[in-house]
Length: 332
Image 1 (cartoon, one colour):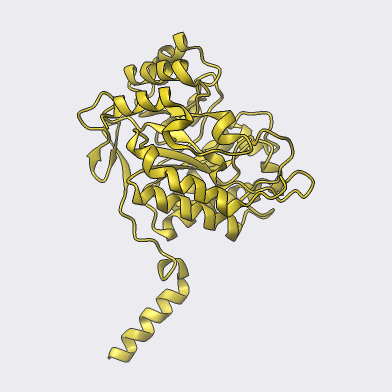
Image 2 (cartoon, helix red, strand yellow):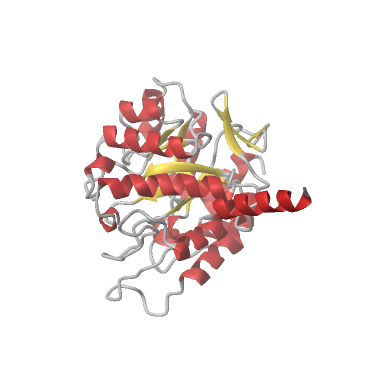
């Protein structure tokens, strides 16, 4: 009887290897409850001004690589770059960050034509890239933070050969999150999905994004999924309806219009998250305050410091004014 049990267990592990030695034991989970964010079953920033809001920082090039030999910076080491971000995660969290945006295709590196993609042409995950994502996600889990995992970035999606490969990439990502056991992850199908820098129509088209959201949900029914609109603070109504939360950007949204954009999005009653705003310093602190006043989660993006090469992850020194405001509103 004991031998038979061992054989059954061995067969199960062989059929699902990610459920065996590769599966992570999480300590952090993220979910929505009545329109507010919770981590480990408790409302984030409870008792503070930003209670229930997922304050976040865009660190999409923390897992960057450039496989284009003509553009890759001499001496750049992807693993050391990820290490530098991981080393500062606890400090960012101590200063109010509840979440970080990481990406399988990064963000604009400050120079043109890098080859930075965690996907092969057929939509398969590339193991070295996935391993860096794993290390970063697990560091955030250890620090009690959530991660917004983004699949696609403009000027990188052309790596995927066709629409079927795009869908396969989404399915593989959602399945990977599930099989790894990550409970601190929510999913962004595409960064600024209507952007003209995307080659694949299925990403630019709202109906295509809805299809991809549904594909991810089929692979991982418990995963919270959305896609972000452009920097004007707007997101297509069809995408809002299909998504689990509304994901917007404020890059080109004036301070005076942030609350109007949030009010417009509230026509659909869902949590609203900004996970990209290029405002820094005093202007960034005011944008954070305006978003929090409107019950909108806000995302810090220090494009020149954190996202453009050479990438820097210096904790609160990245922007003392913004991080002080985030710490204040999070009640840290």
